[in-house]
Length: 209
Image (cartoon, rainbow, N blue to C red; front, side, top):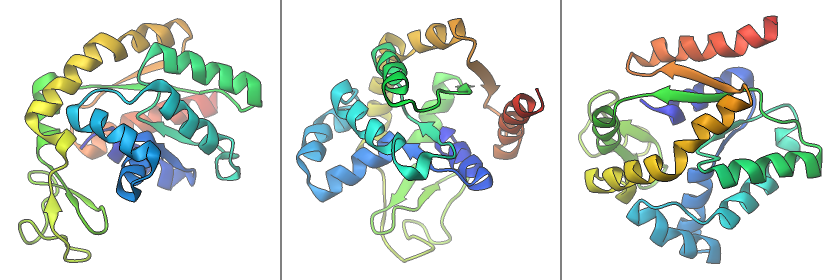
């Protein structure tokens, strides 16, 4: 499973919110808000939602009371422009900056295999994987009996498009945060527990220091 799974697990253990821009945007799409309608076309084609849309959502979330003790950003920033806007937001609002930026290292083939196998409940949004975490009945949610569907942005052809976007726009973030001394690399080809153990080591090492 991917970064979202690890972020969710760490957020639960640390009792801080997981701020997933993807989830925020998907909820906006479901509600049919102006923001959601604007974002839908970008998400379905595997291209990035415009910075001004995402940054506005993140600013509102991080300056709220639920993030006062800390938070985990999941899916943001994705570009250097977003990272620079995030740094400006920290200065303007007095919000504490980032402690870590984690890069989960996975091969392109493995990314395609993982994402194309993901299924989401159309009713309660519970996520499954046809290999790693399948439902008891194929195509049916264990929790509510809803129908499991494959999101448009998890289809193999869309994943390929997203990987191309990553190479062009997101990969420069590695250099950006490496220069700031915030980048942490995690080998993410192992089991969920093995990857999580690496993630915890990063968090706990800083606390000890």
